[in-house]
Image: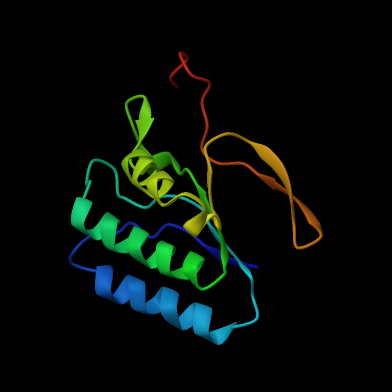
Length: 130
């Protein structure tokens, strides 16, 4: 499993961030699971172009057969929704073509590669914002 966190995608740094993700995946080609730990944006800096480039990278990873888990981070919440909800809606249009992408917005216990993993994203119960 590869763990990637705190990407904080911005147009200024996105090419370097995407290159670093590529280098990490290439360095461990046998890893089947990539877990993004959240914080895809920086507080109040919602760079849609950079975020879409990141999600394009995630789609590419899924098309290569990687299982990709996308956990919500505390920076990713804007009021009562998460910034990647738009992308999730778009990803859902692909249907089974990218079934390797898993959005995690609530705590869940998953068995990944034979290991029980508690995926605990930034979370708040609906109707009870923190």
